[in-house]
Length: 187
Image (cartoon, rainbow, N blue to C red; front, side, top):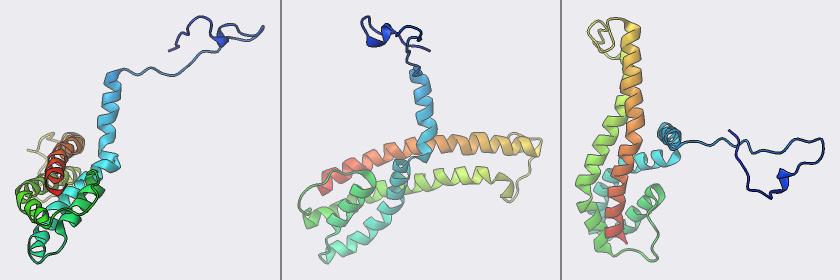
C-alpha cells in the first residue's frame, strides 16, 4: 500500500526521467498488531521475569519472616527482588524493619496463590506437548481422537498453545497485584 504526500513535498517533482519516490511502509491495522503482541508475549523477557518473581516470592517471604525477627534487613531484600523482577520503582533509603515483616506476612497468601497458578499453568503447556508420554494416554477416547495424530494435535494446539498464550497475560495481572502490594508495604 502506498501513502500519499502533502502537496509541495520535494519528492513530488521528480527529476526528468525518474519516477516519483513513494513510501512503501505497510500500514497495519490494530487487529494484526494485537495478534502479534499476543503471540510474542510468551517469548518476552518481561514474561519470564514475572514468572521468576512468582516462583521466588513465596519462598523468599517464608525465609524473611524468621530473619526479620532477628533484625535482618528483609524489607530491603524483598524490595530488591521486586525491583529486579517486577520493576518496582526505587526509593532512597532502606524500608523500616517492620515493613519487611509486614510484607512477608501479608503477601504470603497472595504469593502462594500466584505460585500455584504459575506452576500449574506453565506445567499444562509441557504436559500437553508431551501428551503421548503421560501414563494412561489412550488416544481412542481422548479429545481429538480416535487417531493418535488427532489426539496429539488437539492437545498440542488447544492445550499447550492455549495455555502458552494465556499464561503471560494471567502472570501480568497477578504480578500487577503483587507489585501494588510491594509498593505499598516496602516503599
